[in-house]
Amino acid sequence: MKITLTEHKKVKPDFTKLGFGKYFTDHMLVMYYHNGAWEEPEIVPYDAFAMDPCTNVLHYGQGIFEGLKAYKTPDGKITTFRPYENFNRMNRSAQRLCMPQLDVDLMVDCLKKLVEIEQDWIPTAPGTSLYIRPTMIANDKALGVHAAHDYIFFIILSPVGSYYANGLAPTKILVEDTYVRATPGGTGEAKCMGNYAASILAGEIANQKGYDQVLWLDGVERKYVEEVGSMNIVFVIDGVVVTPALVGSILPGITRKSTLEVLRKAGYKVEERRISIEEVIQAHKDGKLNEVFGTGTAAVISPVGVLNYKGVDYVINNNEMGEISRYAYDTITGIQYGRIKDEFGWIEKCN
Ligand SMILES: *Cc1c(COP(=O)(O)O)cnc(C)c1O
Image (cartoon, rainbow, N blue to C red; front, top):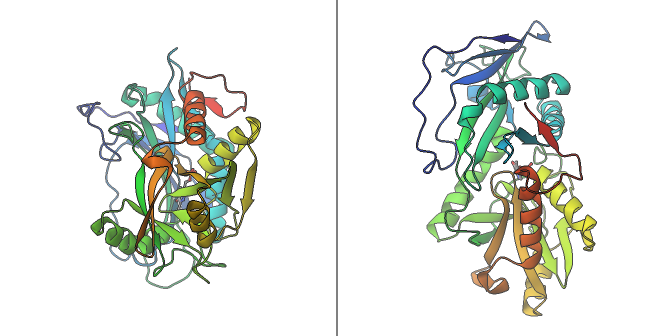
């Protein structure tokens, strides 16, 4: 790997006011795919790409990405959480979008090196971290619709604040029954750019109505629950943890997987199956919908306080974070920040 360090380090932002994805570090990793192979990865000063307006990713969206985080532990170690999972998933996304495969071990090594170089950018206040965004885009200069021949892979890093400004505030979610995010055979289980483009309209409408995000239903019958915006969804019904099975149109979240592992290990009954929105609403009416929460890298665990379906607001657990949500949050963040022993082997040290 070639490394070129910048001679002009940026002035760091106020680490107490980071927000999400607004500031980027001094360097990035870039790797080009050309003549049927990946070239040598390079760490270079963070900079813009010069792009021809006809570059095909700009027209047809042949692009995929990942999201994970790096942390500084109390004993000064720099760590990441399950990075192999992210690059394996990226390879599955690449396959679906007809893009080239990555060498997972090499990518994890590149990532660790980049994070180590940028370690002064890792914030340490509770809940803060360094967000990592690996991305791959098609880079042919031509308008024909076909798999590109050239690609760019890059990794950029962004120090991010605590997702929760005031503690673990529950969110308000609107069950979306007009628009759909994904259908069987589509790209729902790939982390690709177009899935997000397709989701923006419903999200904006939900925001205007006073809701934070939408809960997507399946694209065929609008009957089964799928996921929330950029998070998977978990219900606790009568003490049982239930989450939609990965049926092909749902993004297989690494936080989802980790949460299920943590809860199974703690002895909770966990079910991955199809779950209809009617079942969820009925459980609420019966007083059995104990908790609802989203899982994703950004927020880790995000309690849902209100679920709106067909114009009715259903308040969950008194609009408070529930016991199981709290346990999953404390355990996963405890492992990530080095406060709890990592019995799962999820943590990768960068230094
Ligand atoms: C990334 C993502 C998630 C969450 O995945 P994690 O690996 O837990 O961060 C959930 N849904 C969608 C649509 C996503 O893009």
